[in-house]
Length: 246
Length: 278
Ligand SMILES: Nc1ncnc2c1ncn2[C@@H]1O[C@H](COP(=O)(O)OP(=O)(O)OP(=O)(O)O)[C@@H](O)[C@H]1O
Ligand SMILES: [Mg+2]
Image 1 (cartoon, chains in turn cyan, green):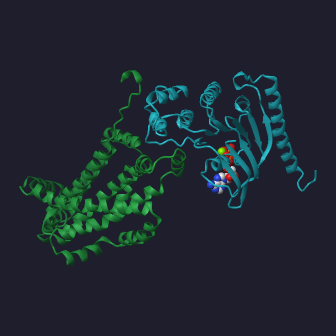
Image 2 (cartoon, protein in one colour; image 1 turned 120 degrees about the horizontal axis):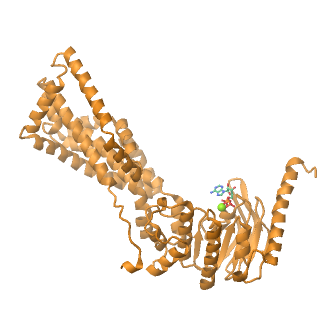
Image 3 (cartoon, rainbow over the protein chains, first blue to last red; image 1 turned 180 degrees about the horizontal axis):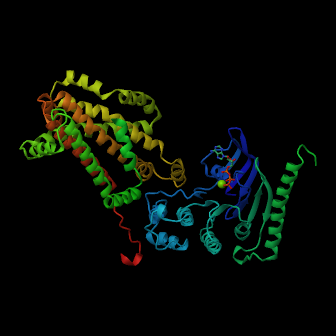
């Protein structure tokens, strides 16, 4: 296991964000996480990466290096696309770097500065940077947001190829169920704050052969939708009948 | 005096590309300022008809005196004397101020140590330094250099320090994740973050110091531009006071503008990353 978290708690002055959260990531596994906005997914990744510590609980990290594709692009405004990607890897030769740029569809924009790019292009640059860094654990926080549908599918394929060639373990946070279905070995569903893992789905099928129309994927998708819908309904009921009227 | 310089420079510390846009607009929009200048001269002319020339010299008379000044042999020498004081005092202030700002930004203890000092120096009116300096250094150029030096330090220090305060913590986190070395952190993140604050500090401080150097010379010196104003005043030559005034204003403007222009120079050449082109 490359990462284990036991009963992790995290609170920010008064608000309890994570409560009693336990999870693990196996070697060479892609773990996808779906959860409501503001439930603490980014906080969880920050704890994994060591940027913040947990308030309570245990994080056992067996990875030697962690790469992180942040929710925001966090590119250096005074460096162009090429330099931003190149900067994280001293050993990187020009060809690998240009290859990466090509893969994320930024060919021809190597010399552009972040403020001259669109939001999605900046995002892709930040993805390429995360890929370029030598690491055995890759954290991705909604990396494909603000990309169009086909580009998303492309990026999923690239991510799979990268995963195949480097055998990284990946923690992938997303709001898109489909992305999770296509990428994940396991999908973790997170609850509202205080957050813990509410449901785990295992998908055994070879990631390259998955189609969104596959019976197994459709079934899991339905279950997830039902759970999310159920969450919503129970919240609605709580709102309309407060104080345990139901 | 200080507030007005800051205001002018807010415009100049705009992001580079916007500043460039403004420059372009300015070149086209020369008509407006010209009309304004004409109005100003007209009002001036009307007023001269109402007051004796001893109080208010006419624009034409001022221009004549100005031409006389410019043509005189010692003109450049006088300017050079003043500029020399300015450069010496300012260079010292920029270096000292930047070092102070960096120390304050980089180290919490240094901040506690120097912050009160910087604000103390900043709150003291320059004329107070002037009075002291005239006693300490006498009536040659040194007093002027001293006040330029001492009064400009906090401006620079505060600007550089502010740059530190505004380094994006998210970029620092990014650097931590990708294990940037100390050197890389400083050269790739901290220095570029400070650059624009340093630049705007530089532009502000030049305008500020230019006014101080003139004030210093008017009060304490027998050389330089300021002393010429003093001489003209004691001889009750109002046209000369006006003419030197024009010289001072134009030079200050030129200084600031050329510095701003120098700092906003940016090569927009795009690097070529085609593998085959190498
Ligand atoms: N530095 C902080 N200080 C105080 N509260 C914080 C801090 N960071 C996060 N929080 C709180 O923690 C909660 C979770 O934030 P987080 O960014 O982890 O959410 P998220 O699950 O990533 O949401 P989204 O899907 O919208 O990105 C929020 O309620 C937020 O207010
Ligand atoms: Mg988030």
